[in-house]
Length: 428
Ligand SMILES: NC(=O)c1ccc[n+]([C@@H]2O[C@H](COP(=O)([O-])OP(=O)(O)OC[C@H]3O[C@@H](n4cnc5c(N)ncnc54)[C@H](O)[C@@H]3O)[C@@H](O)[C@H]2O)c1
Image 1 (cartoon, rainbow, N blue to C red):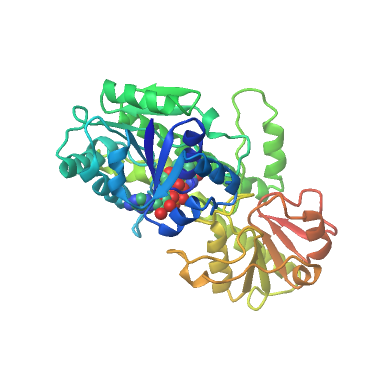
Image 2 (cartoon, rainbow, N blue to C red):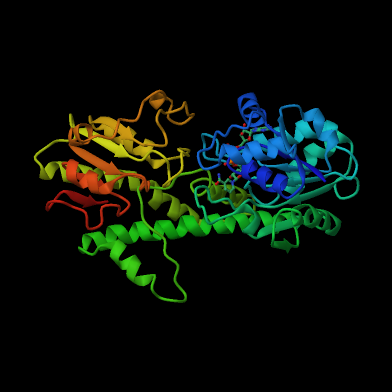
């Protein structure tokens, strides 16, 4: 069995390794030639994916990377894992999927299976992708080639979440497409969850991410409400989660980040309008979560004020640039929003993140590109008027932080029980 995996990022790369280890020959395809070169040389560009795992499958000749789409002719299946961002009007941008479809189509052979994994709105696979594949190949989906959708359930940085053990939802364009998809993933994934169509599979992924977005908004709202009552929401959640049924803990924070939760729900919002439907829960959750960085900044103003310091001219450190702990992924990170807001208020802003030593150019925050993380030392940490914990990386020594820092604004409960003096730690 030989399969191509297109888009070798946070989703495509671990999936490639899992297929290759399961005995399937994988042709990894990416338009980014630096990634292709790195992979063929056995190097990794994602912190939590070990170079050794890549070198192992390259050496075993089970994995090769390329930018040459003509090689699609060689494979029996093509899995697409390209980005699905929002455009500047916060509408779905499926151009990466469409472009990939156009690049594959001329090389598509009869009988090949094409599976889309990128998170997207219902109808992308059987309408948008199908159209470009059929137009560019002259073949018919469901008759000449197979088509399916299977959402990725990647949890970067979670050592307990292994690709092969995470049940995988699969939906085919026809029953025969579903059977082909089952056979493909059966090589690499232990449990498959077949559903009746590509659209049901697409909608399942959106439900999963909307569920997170809405529940995070709920605890973010409760953080404000309970905070005003003098009740610590973290203590409440920790107590509530002892209930053995009917409750699942979600935690507040400085706002949503990453390539999924802040973005995917709005794929549904946009598509729902076509059907005259409104997604009020999603909009409200988005509003609450988007307001979190403002709230954190307002708490920092309060914390500085208590020390008789204005925000204007104060030195503020944002601790953690990645959007979640123990990863180096800074996409959509609320830390950038925090840094922008603090800067607008006249603060002298710096950041510390052991996994992001220097900020790479981003579309949303190009002005931070090239900025370097400060170093971790008593002298540096003590020099800041306030430190905002935006991400609770495990490698950070919070005991040292308590010893060295003047004032800490904690959005992650990382300082729980560690404060060295009254008024040093402000929850936000
Ligand atoms: N990151 C996650 O945790 C996660 C989890 C579940 C689902 N997803 C979904 O998976 C999809 C991919 O996300 P990701 O995090 O892996 O993105 P990513 O940016 O890490 O990787 C995407 C890769 O696709 C490549 N690419 C872009 N256009 C291409 C093209 N036309 N042809 C070939 N390669 C191309 C890029 O160079 C990049 O290497 C998205 O739809 C995302 O929503 C992501």
